[in-house]
Image (cartoon, rainbow, N blue to C red):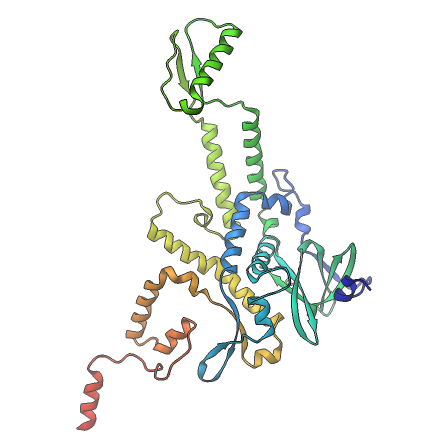
Length: 400
């Protein structure tokens, strides 16, 4: 028996009552610009790659752990739990946790789906083995039971739903995630066209920085000699030094044309359009606003954490709880948690001021604040703020 069959099960049997969802069918439709936007072509667009990278690295760098709720509202890291070891120490024998989550985010962010086989023994998950999305087909029967067809070594294998960890992006069918690259193919295709046209223009060498003109006519040899003489005196160490020529020679620089300016504007617009599709602010991939200040950039980063990273963090936490933890473990208080406080360090002063105001307004007590910071409660921390002197006044009234 082959390793693939031993791990992933028997060959797929034909079943006519199944609805099939192919996660990469969107790549069969070309964009209006005529470009068939495949995975490889999309990743070759710098803006697409940067958007995926900033989201993937942003989530992968955040500590992810399995916690367990204990008495009195406290919690502890379940360091001995097998799922904790998978997601925070070693998911499989060739990936680190950072690489695993980064790969998950790249695939789910681009094609809407991430698949990993849950390699189990006696009900315990020993490792998580990722598949490329293009090798997996999701099938649903009339009772809405799922199974997965995976192409392994040229053969299709059927994997039941309880053996597959399927992370979905935003979904329309509810069974598979929507491919962001499919719905952004017009913006990506146009960006590819603009890039290719500019590359061809520069490769053909039809543009020049300026024109040298002299009094009188030049034959072919004189023109060639003048060009070689100029090139020898403006290259290497002579760059940017004054150039003296005779015969009334003049240099007329060729400034940027209206078409060139429009091309730059089109490129800028396509960057912004692709960023919209992937919900990434342009400043996060280096497309800075000239009017941005350090303070505004910091607020933009916090907005990036809140509106771009946090939805994916919540999606992964819930997916881990539903797919990697058992119902008994959940009832016992086990849950997954990303610690986003590390990404918010730049706003520590703002958080401290906010908590101080909430405490003095008697909206939050110390233990509630500690809970927001992923810290355990302490005895006496459930008391709300008491105005200075009010306790003394109450004591005097009591004594009377």
